[in-house]
Length: 362
Image 1: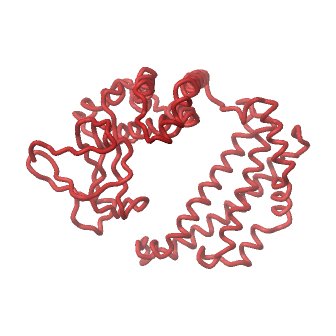
Image 2: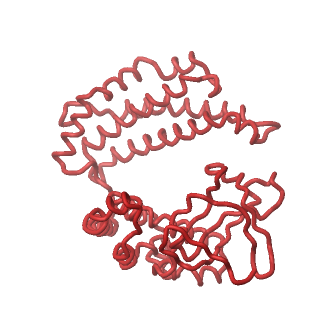
């Protein structure tokens, strides 16, 4: 029983999530059949059912998060308490409520029916569970515990990661927060002292193995450090600091996964040291989440590749020294994502709001 006299019962929350999870799986199978033709996924039918496909992906993500939240909340070995358990139960109630509401609005499009939604997700036990954790006194109880404990849940980090978190937390509070609002409101450039500070802390080498000059153990991949740093820096300011890690992370992982030994040796050490700044060019005016349909092409030419097309929403495009560009290198459009390649394009660094660069040759 929590400080606010709200009972937390792992069996009940797991039962509730089991019901919604089973329903999600059934709907997924139904929608998969609806979007298939001759045993294969039909892009045309996927497009016709794009809204429900998107919503189902969102609901599935919520379901998985709720399941993992419960596992975390009842993991007493990391110091969880009634606070984490009550938050997990409350989040689960919100998720199940969202799932049944969203699918219940247009069940036919999800390949089910009102009767099925009602029988599976509106039984007495689920209704009672959701009502208990939707009451205002439950949220007030959680707030009271957060105020009393001084935190919104234990992190469950090891000693090294906890030390790492403290370092980036202090940097976010002392260096990022004082500048965040000004940079945002005036569309200003990120202060150099913030970039220099992050370089000194090894921020840009978080996803790069020590073998190539990064801070990640070469024999033990570690994404927790990057997640911890991103979370703390984002708390200080997403645009001015939190998002800075994303680009070098994507580029370095792409090079590690598919780059040549020469590319790894040339770029990873420079990225880790903050000498080379990165940009990712994927989104196009007509294609964002539908990456497999992008239209920017790249054709082989003397000395390299010729890229033709338009990209948009390319954060740090001007400041970057290299741009990771996702292009279509196969002319057969039916290949979809299999016809795409990632190219690294070098360019001079610019600190202006706009830039133009013309290569001297090619």
